[in-house]
Image 1 (cartoon, rainbow, N blue to C red):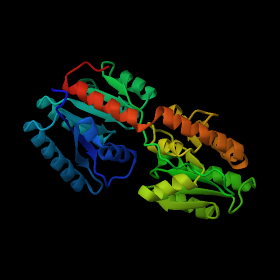
Image 2: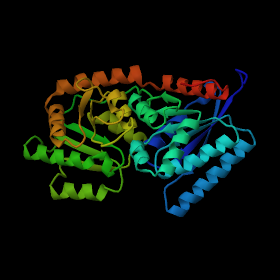
Image 3: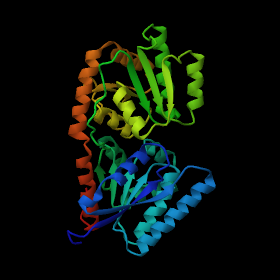
Image 4: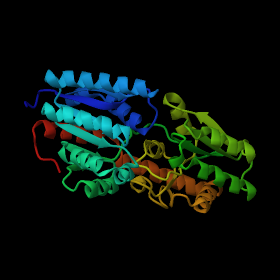
Length: 367
């Protein structure tokens, strides 16, 4: 391929309407100005929320569109975003289609529970998982920890570590406040551990460390556990301290990142959450569990506090430290912003992606 010829890339994954971290990454990739890097980027959606029939229809439509692009040789690389369960099944068929037409493909693995999914699968499915990870052009891993996990499943897989990334904003979170506000951003499902956060808040209340107008917890998200979480707040009289904000995006999210002081993510499993990267880019300390590749963005004692998932007493202690020490928050805020600028600026990320596309098109050997 000539150096001046555009690389035509099709991104395959969630429709823009789907909520969650995968959609955030896809949106980030699609909104980038690829013209400067001589890339033509197009999205084909293969998943959308709704009933089973709607999901099947969306996948079939996406599959047919991609097949047409491959058949007409109007695509050079297919960038596939994958998690587990049904996502794996859909992307396995997409991979086979790419292979049939000789189009190099990338498996961008987002699933925090992918290892568990693999281990619980029957032998036939395990074989397909290993086949997909080994045969694709490249697997993108969201950190060194995930590279090792993928290699344990498929030792011959070509894995490229590419941490999620964020555009560094001009604004910073305000740390000089009378009321310390803690922020959670994400779906409200069991593995996110939000019930642990509420239990920790309840303990702080009973210890007399919470006063209305002095400490607030803002929960941004929706999901299957929302009713249970709201009931817990009501039953334990936590309404003066806890706000449910619903799903927040765009300008509303930007305002929250500027006006809140600390991000809390009590998850039991993660890759490298976009919410954490957004928080540190605004200069926010982070309290998070030691799961997935979180420790690559939250350095314990420097720009946040890391604790073991499920340890509610450790979470209580971390929250207490952030509440009582303005200096701690300010110092960690500075460290967060510095780390974001050094390691997670999206300029490097998009250059790596462009280079990977180029290598696949030229059939050069990837790691």
